[in-house]
Image (cartoon, helix red, strand yellow):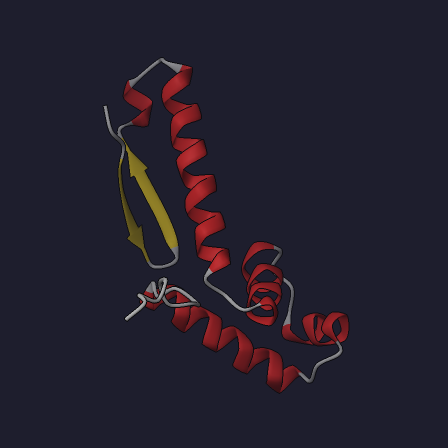
Length: 101
């Protein structure tokens, strides 16, 4: 049984996993989510990745992030906005392989 997920605001709600007692289903979903999260992080530049993880993953304030990364608070806000836009657009950081021609 596949879990059905949808995003509500910034929260993802999954339904369908509670109907099964098979731990393998949970492990498979966990692996899929881990790979999806890694792919998402891969689409960001190193600066965007750092700011995004610190803000979204750890709940750090922009002042804290600025101090950790030796950037201004305004720069961190801009980097986060850019990272959020890239995540929302779902676009890769790099284009696909170029064809010889």
